[in-house]
Amino acid sequence: MTPHEMVQSLGPRMEEVVRQLLPGGSKLGHEWKCGDVSGAPGTSLTVELDGEKAGLWCDQAAGEGGDVAAGGTAAARRELSGGDGDPGGEGAHGVDCVGVLP
Image (tube, rainbow, N blue to C red; front, side, top):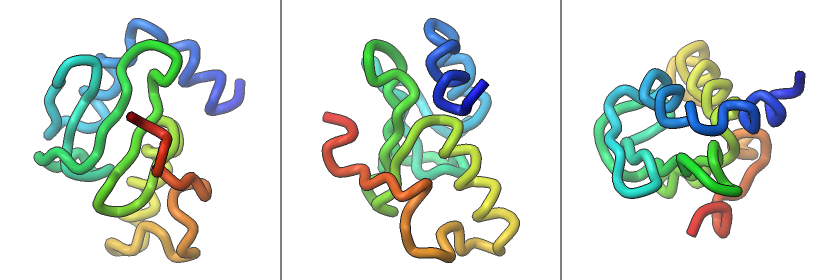
């Protein structure tokens, strides 16, 4: 199963998964809002919880985006690299979050 297929299979459990991955966030309508991929409190990062875009995330402050599988990867990279989560300068999996989420 690919990471994308995994995200698609979550369906109605997306909120439960995002709650675990990004514990400092909160639900606002059909979105989960938090500060960044580490799950800090705030509103810069948005994750779609349902519909066609369920699992897609965008961090407006960092200019990163992707799906929840990519978000977990970005968070792990940040922790392992001592805070520089994007040493290649391309964003999480090269996803530009402009236009990813409304």
